[in-house]
Image (cartoon, rainbow, N blue to C red):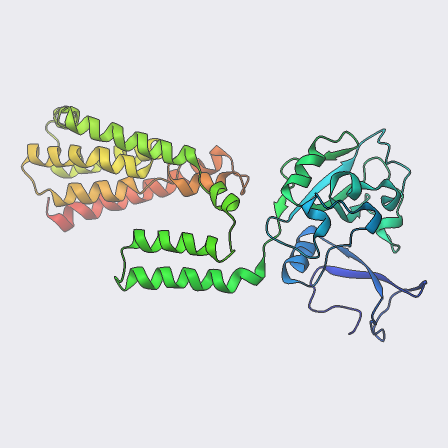
Length: 364
């Protein structure tokens, strides 16, 4: 195999150690043999992909350091929940001046050192032979319990938000198959979409694509509580007559205005509140109000129902307007103002278009 690794993007070979001798670039005529040690420089993303695709393996545990009670000591490859994280050698750390091998970090915490970053320096020697310095950033790997054990260390400072699990790409085909079956089953009306989705969720767990822990983490309880509470408030408003009262008050305020003007005002009010209450809650809340307004005006119900449908889905001007907005807020590092800048102009555009064309279409 040639030494340039064309299939491994963003991974640069720095040197090759063979029988105690170091081979330096260029590697055009170099062919790797069994037992060669390849020193590479790579980004974290590239290394994660190499581990996920099986192009890289995990370092073996020294026999004298093996602890049978620790799961990570028996790992021979990336497995479920295997996590990468970054840690910095603390000032005054007892590891400063020691090589990684002599520091016995894996024996202490169960985490393995997969890489080292020291400012702009890129080594050509073995990582385990490098003497650590304060400020060095280590790329470490281990199971979740190993990462938590390292969190309590004063010698290595674990960087918050740096931990991320390595995806198991070997399970990707079965996950795609399950997803396709759920879509096909629901679209062909073989099963209701709710039933098909639940069966698909059970299937990805049973097939090993997700663990129970990963599946449980995907539930955002705050979102479900917010939607449930909003739906309950909307139902209470309808049952107590509050919806009818608001409909009457709205018509009284807009007295003397045409049905098309009232429809336009209802759209912008609904579009504003949907970014505070969520689209589901706003739709449930304003549908009976819209019906009451149409009945008071003596006009068809359809344009007012359609108004609520369109306006309630203008929930993209705040993070709390829709579940997906909340889901991407943290990973995308968005700010509240980002939603306002992109969402408000779009809401105004939809409002203007609806206010112009809806009265003509429904002959109001």
